[in-house]
Image: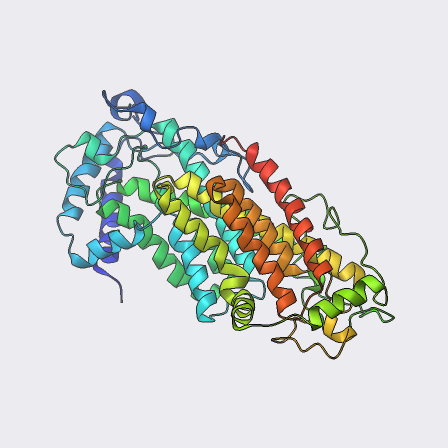
Length: 478
């Protein structure tokens, strides 16, 4: 059943269509759009407090630039007046349900609810795709690029928020100190919904309805015009199309036609998981093998025999067991970096800074994407035997993942994400590195990895993170 606010969205669309001929500047060529008359900053506006006025020039991940995706001009003076009247009429009908929707979508930065949606699905056991980190990655990149493109248009057109032109217009939320056009919430939401629909086409309509509700909530809150909303949706969709094209070309749909090698010190098993990922196309790494770990020692060497004994003789306790199970859970495998990012984004008030928040989510997701590829490159180069295969006296705490041992995936992924979080939130660097270290160590406690797997994985993860941090340090956001 459609909500009242969504019904009113349809009415607003109809109303805009009817009055469009009277909205100079609504047409693609801008009509009688007068930038100085209707969109200049009002006298007394605190320019210093504006939200990231240069973010439109930050480097995007997929699209060519924010400028290349600049939206058509907003309505001019007469059109804006007509929209203000329409906006006042729409808001006069806000009820408790609408207020609840406004509050829901305002709970964080525009990207927050969409990352949280993916988190919730994983924790509930609702399937996304065989590689959930691809969903995080392409959704996060789409939201970031859409936000950067929206910011470029915002500060190019510099359209005042509705309440800046009509001081009598009530607003349901504090007014952001950034230009109104286009809607950042609509752009990020449509980008996320379009990419999610690519991965989960049977839920496309549900995602689309969510995107429309997210963007429209800002109109009903009095923070943006209907035309801001429609321009944001169009922008988000255009960005998402480019991101989906990239996803289709990353090699993840390859079918493995190889065979499991045999011989001393080789992993034994069938249908190895993640085996084709060693040949996926990375986002920033030069090649999957760029940081390939050195070969592991022979499994009959004194060094490996000692490490095997360390795994076998580890004194398991209730604490080590519950931590090992935590790190094997969906929360420990995928969700925890976003939980910490959410917490620190809110603590640092970055939830009021859409470009910064979207940048954080994108870096966390993208870094993991390349770390995943790099770790599989090592695993399927060496095909190294698991500890319990070498020593049957080792009884793992839970089923061992169906792929080779060296290097440790978890150590690689945890190190790379903790390094990114340490970069983004340096005041928490020591803490989050300790969290990442525990994640890697837990695989030894569980009896599924040698200490050398952990060491190699940590170094690999840090090396991958350094590439992404270097990229971030030069993305124009400093």
